[in-house]
Length: 431
Image 1 (cartoon, rainbow, N blue to C red):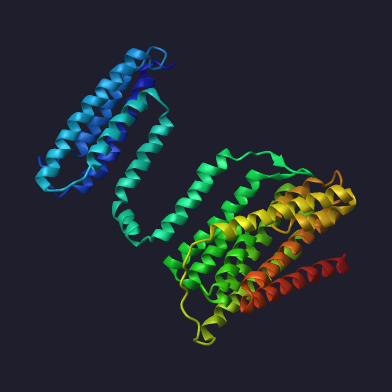
Image 2 (cartoon, rainbow, N blue to C red):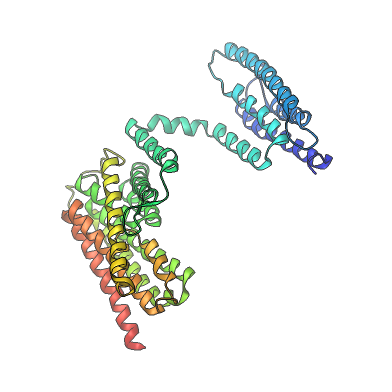
């Protein structure tokens, strides 16, 4: 029952707790200020939360909702409190010769959350209070980060946010075109993934240095898309924005994570398929990691002509979009092959689907087992798809990165394919 005293007391306690939580941060920040010379401290914020809770309790109807009289009460109480705290904060600023609205805004937010704790969702109230305290507590860190960020970095970050939270929600989720068409939303998500991986790589290199940053971003990017890592690394190798050897090692690391990821997905969806794909993929992953470690170990011993990486742009929007469109066209090609050849073209379809999306390919193939495919045939299709994805990295490296980067990626791909094929032949010889 909404109006039960125990439920009201619980919500009132939450309102008080919100005020106390935010007040602790505000009080700690002004702990060295002489008592009586600040507009609001721990006690004021705690009482503010409690006051908001009382207003919310008075505004609630017997059913727990807020009707017109209650809404009017909340509006007048909010206006009165905002006016009082604003006046006192202004006087504090004058006395200290400062210009800050943080205390006033934090107090108004505390009052609002106190009201909402009584009339709204308690989980939202708690989350908002914790978020507010986090932002207040991280003031120095946030200000220091803002001082270091460049305009180009800011524009790139805002572009990714716009792609994710403005453009993506309004894109149609239906497929357009023949043979099942292309899902515009899915293609846009690919573009977001590419841009995000590129941006993460940029940030990691800037804050952790070239070696650690590139490899760290490869690990993170490999969890999303190893192809995106290869694309980003190739672009930077071509632009001279880092050591081609280190960028090649990053592609190897991302590929290794991709191999492991496919194994995990197959294990979850079809253990019988995973039994056949696990060993060759794990072998390929180990080889890729070994080559990456060897490359990183040898890189410092190479000639000293390499200049420290200087990244000029976190990512290029048009190149990312072009890559996403290319992926979409290849997905359409894969669907055409599947439509043209049917079940007999499963291997060819897996190869075309795996060019850029091994996860979707793995899910598609495992769903066909055992209804349309045997576990062995399904595993073979997945392995062919992974091999095509590995070869497309070689194509990207050769077409975009070129030079030493392309050579290292080609060697990595060849060694991984040989390792996987060797394990397959060995297992078949034993069985």
